[in-house]
Length: 448
Image 1 (cartoon, rainbow, N blue to C red):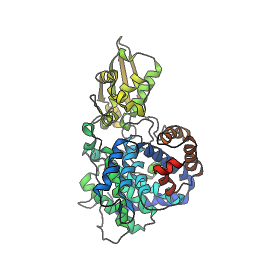
Image 2 (image 1 turned 120 degrees about the vertical axis):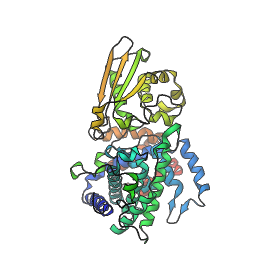
Image 3 (image 1 turned 45 degrees about the vertical axis):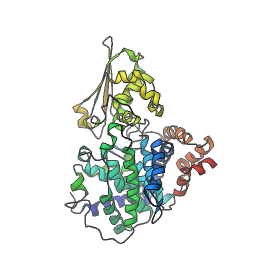
């Protein structure tokens, strides 16, 4: 461990700032991250849980605006909306979703920034989130913490601090404040709870508040991260720091095609491959075995589900849905799909087991092997180590557009406005924070 982890951490993050400042090569990756986040968030804002929070927050707080222009409702809403559909990006080495807390904090803040500054803020926010998560995982998750809430709070705070032009000392104050405010429990995804996404909204809000504190003059401890009672002592430090050879976090994120927990995506891809290799009636399936790595089992082997929140976390549901419906998307979680007796029957024939050889490959490879046994004894198997969207099997810009365009139009944008939005981000790379905010305002969307 470094002698002073706060000093080391801020220095590491600022190396990402220097890289982004020097090179426009990061324009493409940043633009893809922003488009992915924007499309998911706009679609997520229509979810009932987001509407509930939008009505509650003005009542809970005396005013929608905190000193400094922080909009409580927007910070929580953007964080929730960007995560509740389970389509947001992530960093497997840290077991953490990144764009949802980082970009939500940046866009919900009162900072105004041009494209070069946005590029720097996003790259540094991603790097901060990924680095903290790498240092704490897998012990952090095994102790019950939701890294997207804890580590994402720090990443969001760093993104806002960079966009605000904070000094090195101010960024250290920001990180110290965020470390104290970081929170998130994985218990929030149990029992059909809809509060998992609220953890991300809280991370975005606390990240903004921490950055506001960072810009002040409060004294802060020498090492809020590595001190005897600092973040790592309390929340685990079982992981390791990223190496220069691995590159920055943003270059190593995955992007999702399926609206469910990433731990199940290798199994979903395997199910599609099996289905494509040989046509068969799902009624002929006698047994399904999903062999995967250890951390993909606890909380994800549910075979009795009643809500969309449970279904998104359940690998058996996702695989059964593929075999029964032949497709997998947002409509796989509507009321009719959730009640489908054939899907539920197939889930009862599905069991998830640990494959030690796959556990040994994780988190570098988060694979799964699906084996289907038919009534006549025929066994069909497929193993996937890199599901679609991983850095080793990435989405192309065209595939990202195919994902995002329907989400943008689902939120109310016209076809013309959708194409203009995509062009502004992916082609021109000149979108400002104010323009991003305008897409999230219903009145502005209706004008487009």
